[in-house]
Amino acid sequence: MDPLAAQLTAANTGDNTEAPALLEELPADIRVILGDVQYNDPRLFCLCESQGRLLVTTKRGSYPHTDDGVEVRRVFHQLRSHAIENFNAQFKAIFNCLGQVPTRGLVPTQRFVLGAVLVYQLALLHRFENGDDLRVGIKPYLQAA
Image (cartoon, rainbow, N blue to C red; front, side, top):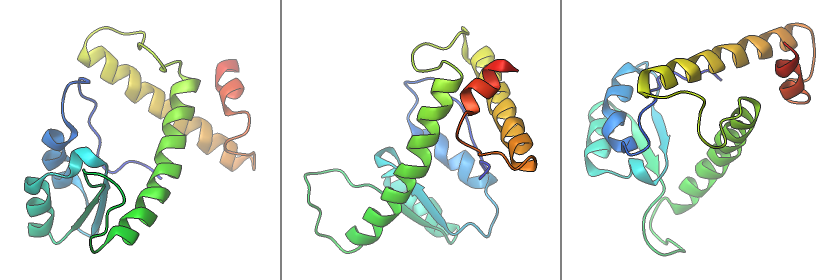
């Protein structure tokens, strides 16, 4: 799945401050938005509601939560966690971004990440077209290129 909207920001920039601009870029037929706890912001809930979208976020506070919707959130976030967190870990390992990135400054880092995403997608497309496994061996495949 390709990202529909993205922005790379400094680590100290809150996701909830960038989200309104990203929501504006999404196609109108996107009706459900999944977000982690940083998206649990009343302004984002209002913005999503005004756009006819449902924002589903994790909740702050002690567990277990007992409010309406807890089971729906649990299912969505388990799926999100498996898809996104596994991808993030694999992507960071492939491009040696588990610590500090090899660039300085926001714009060079944005270019580095955008380039890495492009290379990753091209590699997956090539492997898909050749009937190769999309996950197994992707890191040595890219390192050999």
